[in-house]
Length: 112
Ligand code: 5GP
Ligand code: ZN
Image 1 (tube, helix red, strand yellow):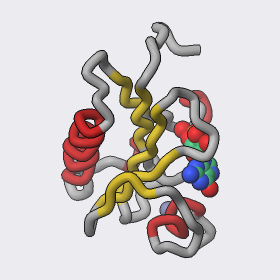
Image 2 (cartoon, protein in one colour; image 1 turned 60 degrees about the vertical axis):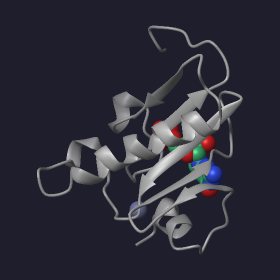
Image 3 (cartoon, rainbow, N blue to C red; image 1 turned 180 degrees about the vertical axis):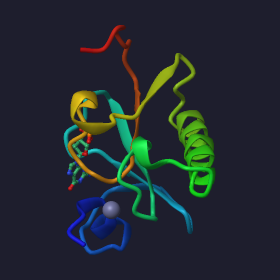
């Protein structure tokens, strides 16, 4: 399967890792949109939030747990943002579920 995030998860494409365990990988975004910009992905290939089901949803909770741990490690006491872009209208460009952890600057709302 030609999925760039699966290749990163398998170590076939290098990344700057922030966290890894058997289910989740967190790595720094190549094109950071904030002073801290980390992507959290399940190692299992799930295309998007559209594909979340009772059978595969546990990893989503684990991703949030890892995001909170990373936010604490990065001293984002002032706050941070977790973003999931889903599908074309959501602005998803990589078709492997991922959550963006963004921090280190004040965020705007609503997003563009
Ligand atoms: P999306 O637009 O799908 O929500 O987010 C995809 C993100 O993946 C973008 O922020 C983009 O910069 C990042 N990205 C795409 N390809 C790579 C890559 O090969 N390595 C890393 N570290 N980030 C990538
Ligand atoms: Zn994948």
